[in-house]
Length: 297
Ligand code: UD2
Image (cartoon, rainbow, N blue to C red; front, side):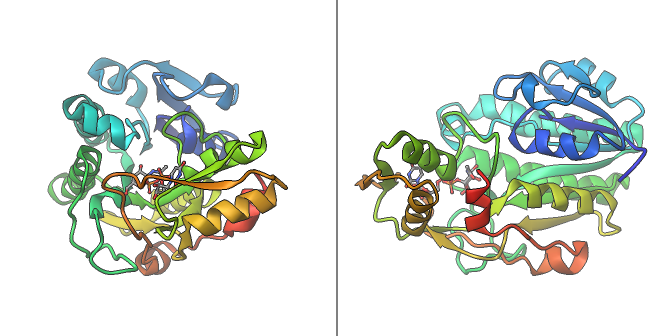
């Protein structure tokens, strides 16, 4: 996309900042971020920064004035934090999301919202399609599910062009911090020569999708005629945590031992996206293989 005025909430964070990098050369880009987990060092110089809380209606109103397009990536991404403080995460993940949709309605803007595979909970069938039952196992999942449904409803009720992207396990550069995901945790352990810690037997599987592919999915969502829809964003492949540990140890030439800890309570056993809807409607297909994605890190 080109020559658009674009707001990226959470634009200094992991996924948001990669999107900003791609958009900034050809568009007028604004970033709303409170820098609680995001970083200024992720941002190119020529973006306009609105520093503060996405829950602040006045700030959001200023940031969204006159925009064509909003990518809503601001969120409390820690599932654990949502379990510890459900109301607090609800204010950011759901109430602020609703504010964003409302702002888009005022501005006649399109919105792409970050939804999650967490909305499915323990999937009954694999790969999991968008029509699968939604039984989230955390407040985070409930919040993302409600946001995802509000996005659909805003299209139905108010003709706001919305698209919800249901991310599977996203990884890539700039994913860091205590809630950063297993790939960055294993990489850190392997580089430091410390034990790589598998939680449980390591036979659990995930669909790991590189952030560059997630950016491409966002760009497709920004122009598709298929609005009011939700799409799984993954690769359609599965990788066991044990295989992941070995791949990372090999890729880093590490001599770290691979050790097992207790399984994570409530951990989802298997997760894999049915990506046929995104392929059909968005022409989206993941292009970065896991090994090369890890090597590039
Ligand atoms: C992902 C999302 C989360 C939510 C959830 C929905 C990420 C980073 N998180 O959580 O936001 O959408 O899916 O189900 O994408 N593991 C280890 N050792 C470690 C760390 C993790 O074995 O040091 C295991 C962990 O027990 C799990 C798997 O690796 O089986 C993936 O863990 P994760 O935290 O990266 O992601 P997940 O799928 O729990």
